[in-house]
Length: 64
Image (cartoon, rainbow, N blue to C red):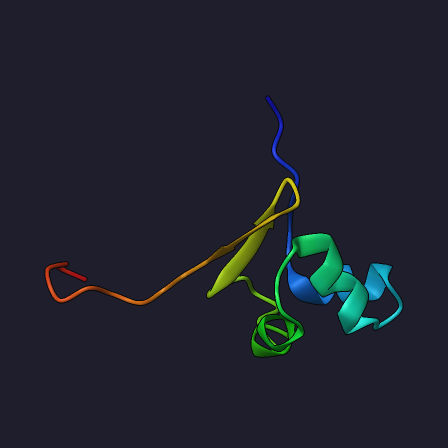
């Protein structure tokens, strides 16, 4: 099974900068797209097979 991993900046290139279209593709709010627009290294988010995955922070019970 192969996973297609992308970032929101990559999707914006595919949609010629159309944030609304990226939000529609990911089934999320346009504000969410703007939140991750500068995360080119995918440190806080990733789009795996068309599903947006986000890092929600470290919990108080983690060792990191």
